[in-house]
Image (tube, rainbow, N blue to C red; front, side, top):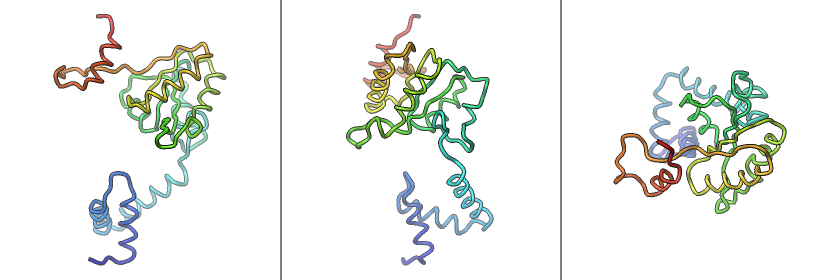
Length: 198
């Protein structure tokens, strides 16, 4: 079926979004054409607003609309503990757990030589400088538990080894209610290595 140029352009742009294939892009395009004009234009305005107003925080590289993000301006946060994460979405996930009240540093990626991403393509230099200037007592490696995430955490740990700061990582292991026979061997290995006193 032939689409008009406007519809074809919309489908093409929607299809470039992560996780959206051609069929999903077509369904989204049809939905946008069926919805009322005000709702469709509100979506367009929201996209425009994000692109024009949201940038990275000057301190931690979280998403922000001013110079600093809401976390960096919150005086109730513990300024002695820093959690290093790969992306803003990782920070959001940790914040939703409501268990951490320290500060963050967002790397905006991870070291991945196979993808051509080295330490210079993420915010490692800014992190090291931040630790040098601040009075952090602990830096938590909150990178994802993948080969690249662990490699990034190891690289950062080496870069921070000259500073008087304790370097920790997020605990890993078996979740409550799971059966050991069904748990991935890597998760079991992490659980054994990071076991705690009962």
